Image (cartoon, rainbow, N blue to C red):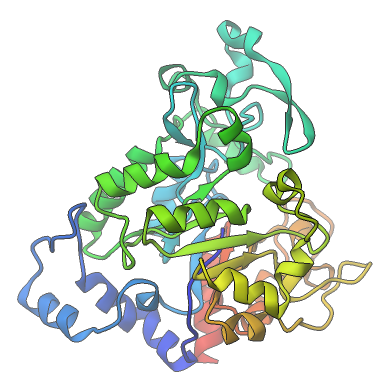
Length: 393
């Protein structure tokens, strides 16, 4: 999740609903960075549009979290495709984890028991095991114990069926995508849609995988370079919860980079491994943000770091994080907005059903009002309507 480095006015953003997006669509690039068959009008629009890269995105930016995961099993081409169809500005295509033979695949976690039908495959029953993942004992099936060919025999399922029973309709429909397939899909969709498609991959548990000899950053950089997407203005933002992973990527690629930030009292796992006593609370101080700005363009904080909740789950007073991050040139893309009651602040819930929608429009409006540059959401269509209300209100 997370990203960027400037703040644009609501006026610019409202032009972004249609006008900015039309201009965005004028710059259609292939894997090599060459313009693909633009019309004369589109060429003129593209050449007159001076902003590139992150600054070409509408603000607040709507990021499809693991695709359109409110409606389809996450990290599938069904979810990614729907996010684009619903109008997401960026698709978080790829929480990246490796296979045993070194390929990068898109899964929320390396443990895939809850996101695939692996438990229904008797040939893989012996692969079930318990590992310590970032200090937590975890039992299940892990991507690093499968070859890519083996993983391709599995199919994705809904991760939170209690909240999203309708998504279980699509269980078994899609396979696990590779990051390379995502990069090819991005180019294909850019050509088909006549506008640049953006993606937002994440390196997952990089310290854990480096200790296994499966370093993520070099593999990500190699693929980005292969497809000509490792430049400052490339439509690929890379994020990680481990600052050292972003620092490593900063030396390998020129892409916009984002440091993800969990709860204030938590410690990034690379800090734990390195004996660094700092917590996320230290990273969101002015000094911590200045340090991050030395190697990244943005942060992806949990929404609670923007507006904390009280013991009853209601929103309290916004922190100074937005102002402080903007002061050092960092963009904020907090996570995650979801429509269902259990994921909303208490005062925005409606009824008691776990899968019923609450007042997500009200929640979006409250978070947008803090000045955030974008947000990750499982429901990109809701986010886009909320943005239109906000910038036109």
